[in-house]
Amino acid sequence: MISDRMKKLAAGNSAIRAMFEEGKRLAGIYGAENVYDFSLGNPNFPAPKQINETIKALLDEKESTYLHGYMSNAGFEEARELVAASLNRRFGTAFGVNNILMTVGAAGGLNVALCTLLDPGDEGLTVSPYFVEYGNYVSNFSAKLIAVPADEKTFQPDADKLAAAVTAKTKAVILNNPNNPTGVVYSEETIKKLAAALEAKQKELGTSIYIISDEPYRELVYDGAVVPYITKYYRNTIVAYSWSKSLSLPGERIGYLVLPDEMDDAELVISAASISNRILGFVNAPSLMQLAAARCIDCSVDIEAYDNNRKLLYNGLRELGFECAKPEGAFYLWVRSPEPDEKKFVEKAKAHNILFVQGSSFACPGYVRLAYCVSEATIKNSMPAFAALAREYGLG
Image 1 (cartoon, one colour):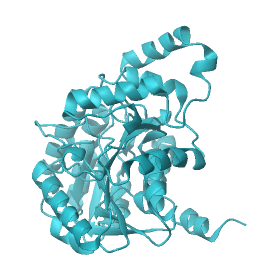
Image 2: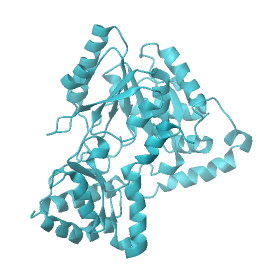
Image 3: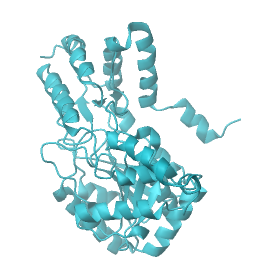
């Protein structure tokens, strides 16, 4: 018999994954070209060719006992050095090898950070709408996730509301920038306000409150948007990063944590994070991919292709009468449902072979999320179906 906790999770399996599976079912009936699946953030664009070339070179260059063997729980020193040097060059930071911990993607990194910080009964805050798994990650450590609604006009975090939600039990604030599901980039002004509010709460309560900045979409930004590097604004910051999106490597599960020396109890946090990496069962990040991704740290996927998709989908839906938040980053479009219950909107769209995810999965009902990391053809071919859906609601 499985645990009571897993019974609940199994019964309420992710709506994102469920819709992805529905897409495969419909493709088997109608043909993949006639199903417009915007459900899952699974990049359709290939990894840069340098990735395969680097992997081949590593296989020839490194002894197998080194390349495929154990290393420090924190990861290969040469990979961590390359990551630290890149961050310092791009953001004017001063990280060293000990400030970097290689992780099994950003998800693994978030769990390592939360395992390091949280005791049972503690609280973590986040800003809604938020990535659906945050609640599960926090509950992994018998803590509670508290969601603070963003400003619904801009979907920027509200520093005053966030500060009001802080209690003596608050240990961490998870921020996702650029944001999944809205595509919004949290501005420098927003980050400064959040930092000031949390500094004040730390002083008031006599506690340490850590921002965990979840940044797998950092490089996917448009129209000159800038993603602030939060360690420069708030000393108690841990950064979780993944190459899943920037290098189209979601299945390789490779990323890193940044653990700055400026944090409260930095030496202890860094040591505990390395132990957390081990006891959570990761032991260490995948060895080959540590070196491959770190050596390709200046490579990127085709941002112009993502931008083209963004414009096609945003402009196309706006012309049909749908209300959308214009995305500045990531590869998601956040659309207001034309009826109060967005689950009904999802079902009506499915009748046209259009698949997207209900906003209630992100703790923000009344909206839906579309992932535009699909082929250009999928977006273009979906427009007649979207037009038919718009007519059902008298839009346009």
